Image (cartoon, rainbow, N blue to C red):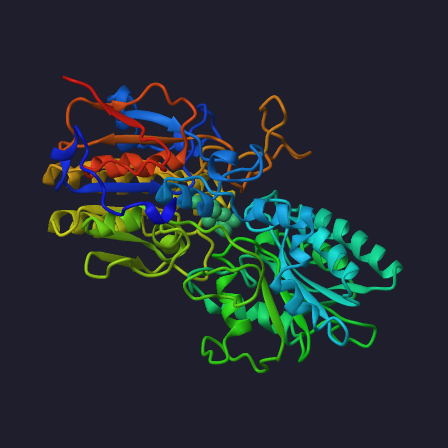
Length: 560
Ligand SMILES: O=C(O)[C@H](O)COP(=O)(O)O
Ligand SMILES: [Mn+2]
Ligand SMILES: [Mn+2]
């Protein structure tokens, strides 16, 4: 029973002596393992530091699972992602994640019995139900099949007027797939209209340009969405969403991720679905990071991030509650996973001093996600979290080195200061540049990530410390869409179809450093281990046994 568990960790039987040595924990974002291939940017890039880890000590390098049920996703066809990946890395336990919890609530119908649904339902008589979110089957932030079920369920439960505000994807799914998803949903909306429900698309835009910013990197992204969704204002106006997406994609530089905002208008040119007093709003993404900013704009009375012009009196619910600490939003359709007793909390309660750092676009990954979707410190006297501002307003293939070296230099300084027992970073390049689909740029990004790793490992060497280098899921190791036999798919002009999404590949984990006892090696009897096994491993390296309810440690100590 959780309440009977103690917070105090027992000293490790063999590694207790390791206590007091600094442990550097490096998470390479979007860094999977795949066969050598011209579209494996990690393989093509010059990565001497990581190559040395792989070739140097076979007992201290292995692969671990980073996708599907190993990280709490519904099936093993689900690729990994940062949220579930960092949750597993930090929590040491596998929780059923948002995607699965929503599936279960929809399948059982419990979603319609909950407080959140009842709250918004009160607007159905007189107001409009607005559904805002990412339209794709990527399964990272949302899933179209869940939206389809929710649409039907909401209308069965009394919604008479529904407006859908879409964000096109092209990041977790192939670029150009927006057209197919709009067609699919238009079909559903048409069926609802046949049944007498006034259900239509109202606005849209590409996820990276409209609404789905994260960690307050660029509020203008949220403002563009607000203008379209709430005010009914956008530079582009169309009478239907399919035409909108097709037309906007005709610009040779256009892609789904960055489509400009548009609104759907009637014959007279008036927007058909601005959000007004008395309406209900649901943000149907289950994943938190890219919904928190919009949730704040929709919910906070006092708000100064941009001029909202109007702040309609609505009833708003998230698909999940996106931030348990902030209780944001107050109302939600499905309770989020309650990730408890994370390694961050255990270590803080056992006196471990931690420094965590990344650049803005991944800052919450090594803090908020790592700590079980919890903002803030466990113990401000022992922890310091530092954010390096990311470049804003440019796609990352234009600056593929990102802030890798700056993050590594911060980590180096933290290590050399000897003020911390754990120094944890996320290096973003493999993922953020990988998502652009730009192979040349991703190769440059991977090299920059390797440079960063070298800086950190050198610092660990200097202080006699220990390192753990791993990743949260794959991305840069496979940058092309393939047929079933694994051959890259090409279009009529012979161009390959870039793969912007994450992958199902395992990720590497390497341990080492002068502070690691000679007999420490990876156990051989855990072939299916995954990211959730890392927390117990890191606790051991700090000189502690892990709690019994954690997934087992990856390491053992043999006599040397
Ligand atoms: O939000 C994103 O950028 C992608 O959908 C997923 O990437 P992440 O899981 O690595 O953040
Ligand atoms: Mn990631
Ligand atoms: Mn990613």
